[in-house]
Length: 305
Length: 282
Image (cartoon, rainbow over the protein chains, first blue to last red):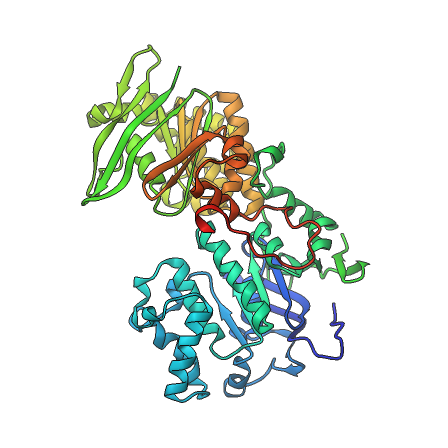
């Protein structure tokens, strides 16, 4: 899964990254195992999977909230894997993240305008006047009224709060925005509006997204390419059409088959199953078997079963 | 013969109207889906039917009737009943399951014991009979390795298995109506599919009617016979599931449906595509 760049490095390239966490009784959680992927400019790569598959850990590794045990992370061709916090700071302008719960992501005692201006202040990229202008512009961009700048987070609805978080993520003109379940907590009408906003911003600013979600119907709507994760490893990766129209791995098929379709004319009989998702926790010295891939079509990688 | 008839139900919290003049019916054996966004009044409606809404809150049921058809053919208005009568209704006639099974289960008792407890309280049976019923219920909800699992504590089970236990508790006294409030919302999609399949199968086997509350239009499309759409404390539209999805009358419903991502709807499109929002959202 290396990049097939057109002369330009991908925005981000992840090469064989692994991360374990300690668990009880000397066991280890194998959260991410040997994951490789890349995201091109202006592209949305969605990472889908069920709870515990490692998708959020992957996001945290890319943004260096966790340090990888193995592997490299390249941001626009620059290896950021071992950068010290101070050295990393310059790169954070390229790379921003939005989380699931906008209420938890905003300081309840800080006016939202100041929260959105904070990255500009921290990175010292704007004077006070410039920052004020920029924040006003960002508010317009995400569809919020300027008059709301002086409000506190609790005075906003969930959708508005997520717009504030998007405005803050865009303050430094990043090239890649990681959206970790960023629309999952929103009501469906608000979710659609925020997704439309993300698509508009992508068009206007040429943004790349790493879109992490458990919701396949949402992913189908927003992604150019899709990576399916299962127990810490990518088991299928390809264009949206390849993964959704021609899924090859049994887990991808199972996942797609489980999604309820919002049309009563497309009801399916569900077999009575009782399977559970296996645990990513392994005793010390043991671990999951590394998957190998077959490229079934150009750009469509499937883990061998 | 209508099983439950809700007429003009109105519930207020300190002057705020959480449910405003709601009227709908549930027929024996059918699944009524109640859909709406957060705060639209779905859960308050359910809790009002159970007469749980006024417990420990400032809620007041200010108007309406909730009429339950009893086995002897008589009709009982639940809003006029005292607490002892309601206790005999809950579990035996109408049972309820919630979104998060972990908070509904007692962490310090084995799950089998908790099913047996419900049976003992409602039917006055002895320990042996009630444990035998718990074991039967484990088979009904298809919990594998039942003999081992019946002695487990809630924390030893996965979310899907816990929700199966909750369904078992809900059904253990043979209610005629099961109210399920977001029963699959906290579950992963493959586990949700299992629980939805189980619920449908159990309805066939037991003939229990169901009021299924969810924000997920996909789940509604999959299991509901009829649908009630709620918005801002009011029922904005109700009808057969096919009509709601394919010829909705209200602008609110059309807006809601236009915002729902539908798996497969992107076939033949190259890049991502924004939602073409309709109705109230246009």
